[in-house]
Structures are given as structure tokens and as C-alpha cells.
Figure 1 (tube, rainbow, N blue to C red):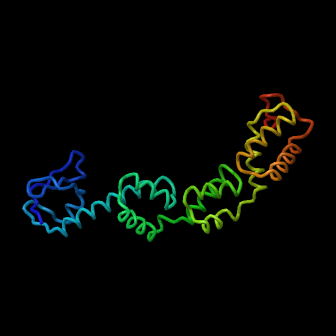
Figure 2 (cartoon, rainbow, N blue to C red; figure 1 turned 90 degrees about the vertical axis):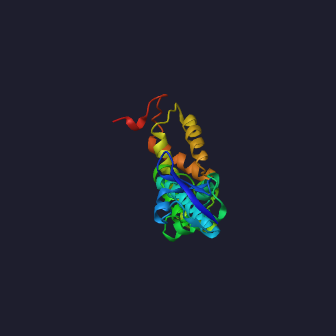
Figure 3 (cartoon, rainbow, N blue to C red; figure 1 turned 60 degrees about the vertical axis):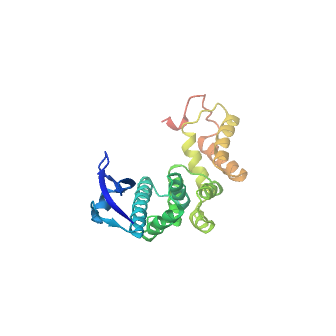
Length: 221
């Protein structure tokens, strides 16, 4: 039990330092102080003090989570790591994440789908590499399997190679194969897919068209 002896606004104005029996106890959001109608000379029980501290911790944790999610969708594991680094206890983390899931703001299946579609649209790579990326994000095996099911390695490799070759320089077929093949391998594509893609792109480029270094045949009229 304690008596509120002072409520002092911090420099930013969004936090209030609460003093009990003449000593600083903790800070609360200005909104919480207002909504709870806290005032000087008010007596707080131990349960009320704990409840206030817990409510403030929850709100601070929620604000961090919402801000983190505002940039792009995140996996549950990513958000948990973020909140742990900010020093929030597991109980508060769990409550916040449960609330976000109930509101549809934290959904690993939706995150996996977003990640896969984003990769396919802007930076195609193999199904296996996409799977590995999602595994590192802490997404469940079931959600990953569903998300990557639509990836066609042959199509993804062709689109990735077609985009890359426009800015690639080469002087002969061997150099063409080494440079483009290495690029596709770094994208996680297997030997058979890489070989088929290299052959397809070279045939489209034209065996007779061997640009000198720095010339891009796709820019020719």
C-alpha cells in the first residue's frame, strides 16, 4: 500500500513519474494516469500498484510491437526477438502477441505467403532457398510448405536470369555460362534447372551474338 505524493510530467509530456510516500515508484503513460483518474493523496493497494505497472508495461510493449509491424509483416519469431531485445518479460510478450493474433495483425501463414510472393515478384529464387529463409524467420513447417507450394523453380530461374542478364557483361559463351550460372546457383537453383535455364537464355540471345564486354545485346534495336 502507498500514497501518491507526486505525479510529475516528464520532459516529453507522454510519461508521468509517480511517487509513492515521497519516493519515485515508476513511470506511467499520461493516458493511463488520466484514464485511471490518478491524483495526489490517493491511496493505492499493492494489487492496484501491480495492476498499474502491468497495464503500463503491456501498453508499452504493444506500442513497440505495432510500430515494428507497421513497416512490413513479421513472423511471430521476429516479433518475439524484437520484444525480448527491448526487455519485455515473457508474460507481457505473450499477452501482446495473443492480442495481435486475435486482430489478424500477427499471422505466420500470411507472413510466409507475403514473403514468398514478394520474393517471386522482385527477387526470384528457388523453392528450397525460400524455404530456408522462412525457416530462419521461425515459421512453422506447415505454413512454409503451403506458402512455397506454388513456386516453379524453372519459371523462377528463367525470370531471375532474364532480369540479371540484361545488365551482365560477357565476351563468349563460357563466360556467359559461368557468370549467369553462378548467379543462379547463389539463388539456390539446382544443377538441372541452372543448365536448362542457361541453354534457354543462350538460345534466345543467339549463339551468333557474342557481345564484347560492356555491350548488352538486349539494348540493341
